Image (cartoon, rainbow, N blue to C red; front, side, top):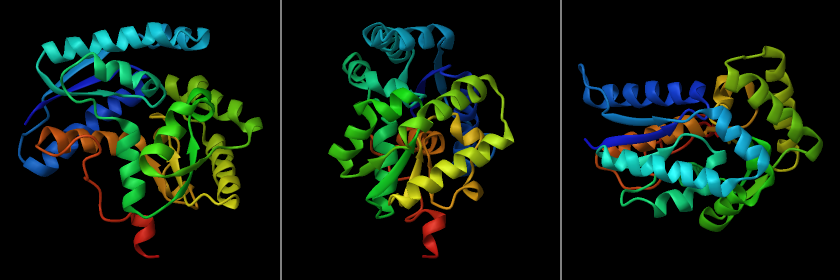
Length: 249
């Protein structure tokens, strides 16, 4: 089993979930006392957020590329950026190392393609919802039409993520607000919803949504285990043939 390199801490709330889910998946597949070999570089998220707010993406690309190189030197057989937003600099990170970067966008796109969906809604930070790096990648590589909430709701979703979830705060009334946003996108043709921020799964589960949810945190963690155990990269097919919510359709 290859060592998994994680660039985490963005935020550490979701990175902790990655660590747990990766090890759970290894135990499920190998049994006994087996666990994953993981090498991690955990960023100071406050520094990353400041650079995001200033639009200094080149500086962030340099930081994450250096982290990936350190993970490669430490023996990682693949690397993962444990956040959706920072996949804006995924090409620079991949170019800096000789090991594969398991791209959260491809893992997600493959799961949606497997389920036969063609139009999905996207929830995430302002950067993920409003910039092209996530939506355009899914359109180009996976042929998906990606909807976002009305622009007036972007700030609401962004604040729930940064003001609450990234700080370990789960506010149940905001679950209702997010469900209303999902229903609005369903009314515009969304067949499923991408939880395009790794913290959103702390607030939303399948029972909260009228549409299938694609939890990028869980999808990414499972794909990393699949690759570490010999699967193809990126986007190893590690999910059931269909999303559980679609199985009965």
